[in-house]
Image 1: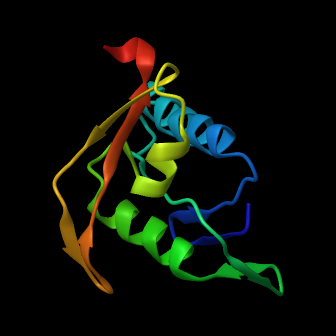
Image 2: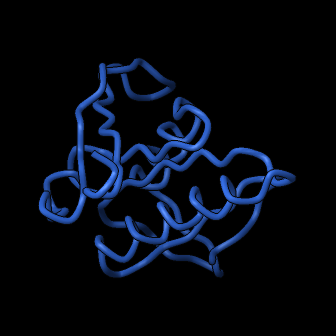
Length: 117
C-alpha cells in the first residue's frame, strides 16, 4: 500500500498476476458487504518512479484514469497488463477506447475471474 487519497487507495505489486488477484479480491469483498460502497479498480503495468514513499509516472496516471472510468464493482486493466495475464486464469475483454486527461485513446480491458463465465 503506497497511500490513500480520500476514499481511494494506491498500491503496487511486483507480480502482475498477484495485482490482478488483489484487485478482484477487493471488489468481491466489497460486494459481499452490503454496507460497504461499490469498489472500482484500475490497474496498469509498467515502470514507476519511487520517491519518498510515493510512486509517480505514466503507469500511475493510467491506473488512475482507468479507475475513473470503471463502473462500480468492476476492474479495468491497461493493454500491457492484459497481455501479461494468463487467459486461462482470467477472463479479459477489451472495452471501447476512452478519451481521458492525457490519454486520447486509452484502451481498457475488463478483468474477471475465468470461473465467472
